[in-house]
Length: 148
Image (cartoon, rainbow, N blue to C red; front, side, top):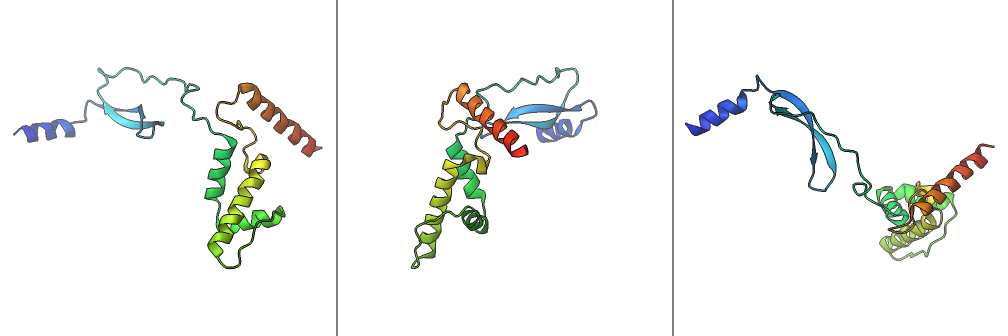
């Protein structure tokens, strides 16, 4: 009997309205889901601004590592060829050759973070806002010079 009453309550959505509710997921990210709520009990949804602590701080190295990880094998070799990057070849093992090519690609991108879109990120964890600002200013200057 109890199960039937609970089921009846769950199915009765006549008085409820759908509202966007912000929840924190397992990985710590905040996302919005739609939820049925009673309009008398529900208060206005409070959307708190995202604070500096909520934004995961990524370094150039972390960004480049993820960027290279998401590249296809063909794209990696094409990038190496386009930028004339050399790596220690291994004719005996294709896997070792690929590992060496990836290491060379990462080192190339660490030295040229703008190629991976990481020039605006701090070089180290805990970098100051001034360092981030300097990176942004350099990016703007480079864009202005390229547009001339």
